[in-house]
Structures are given as structure tokens and as C-alpha cells.
Length: 296
Image (tube, rainbow, N blue to C red; front, side, top):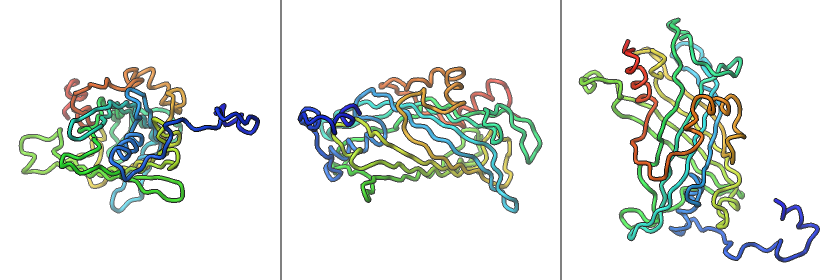
């Protein structure tokens, strides 16, 4: 930033010259594609903390009635990457992270710890998303297991680079019982995300991570378990936007304060060698309610 300010005033080559190793990463080359993808997820500098945040709303959709806005949302994921090397697959990386999402009152913007279910009238505890860890299940390498080179899953248009991803989820609900295959009760959801960058920024080999990164995240699923909706008809969906920030102090309120007061462990990512199984909101709910003996 200082150099940019001085450039109109000074002609010294030391100020205007690019670093000796500066070049544009090529998405068609395996190792460059890996570096690009690593930068979209975290940082090519091992152990550098990366913070993603998002905000938006959660809505209900029930057949025969108008959609309702249930909550405002604020979310944050804090992560870091470990750099790896495989003799056959080349360089690689793995990301480790923790994730928070708060449910806020749409009228006041304050955190909601109790919620009156508008369909049943029951007063319920709100269980905010606090998943630790949320790690990459498998490392990513420059070459796939079959030896083919990886590619950067990006679209470049008019100086912008963006990528989209869909994650269909359909697996055994951890709240189900031994006859789940007979009676149903699978967890069924779809998560859809998009990331947006400036191509020159993302493809700059001298940057460990992009200076500008915007994102969107949407999700469609059944009712959350703490809503106590059973098999009632309907779904919920979320719509959020956000980006990357370089400091926890730049997170919006009430996220910034809630992190420090309730979730201090989320002020830093998990250790690089974290091997714990990933935690889902359903498993958190089961542990929380099970510990209190609240099964009904």
C-alpha cells in the first residue's frame, strides 16, 4: 500500500519493480492449479490463519403458507492449512477449521437463546452452530491418485475468477435408532456455495492468499432438530453472503463479542495435525440433549 502511494512521486526501480519470483500462476499446470485452489480455501503459507465470515437469513417453506423469516444469521469459520508432500502425487495441502453460526432476532439483531416455535407454540432452546472440527476429509495434491494432474475448478471472465460448488448430503441421521432403515429418517440437505476473486490477485504467485475474496452460501434442509418439528411438512433454507477478513476484530457484532464470551476456543483454528473426526450440528445436539437427559 505504501509503495502504491509513492509510485506517482518516486521513480526508483526498487519501488516499482515486481519481486524476482513474480509470475502468473497457470491453472492448466498441476502445481499452479494446486496453489490456486489452496489460496481459494486458505493460504499457501503453512499455519497462516484465515477467517471466512457470512451473514444472511434463515427461512421456512411450508406447503400452503407464506415463507417465514425465522432468524438472521452470522457465521464464521477460522482455519489454517498444512503443506504436504507425497512422493507420487507431489505437493499438497490439508485444511483444518472450526465453525460458528449464530441465530439472531430478525427485529433486534441480538442473539436468540430461546425461540417460540410458531407452529407448536413451544418455547425451545436455540442451539447455535458450533462445530469443532470441520476439517478437510482428504488432502488435495497436485496429482490425483490415478496420476492425472489436478485442475483448478474456476471460471475466469473479464478479470474475475469464480467457482461454485454443490454438496448434496444424504446419510444416516445420528438421532435415529436401530430400525432407521425400516422407517426412514435420513438426513437430507443440499449446500450451495460460490467464491469470487479478482483473477490477477488470485493468480499472483507472490501472494499467499488473495487480497479480495467474496462468497455466498445457501442451504436447503429439513427442520433443525432443536426446533422439535418431528415429521411435520416443510423445509428451511438459508441465504447468506460474506467474504474473507484478516482480523477477528473486523467481524460484525454480536459475533465478535459472543466469540470472546462464549466460544474462546474458536478464536484460533485447530492444530495442523488435528485428526479428530468432524463434528456436525446433529451430533452436537445429540450430545447436548443427551447430557441433560432431554430425549423428549
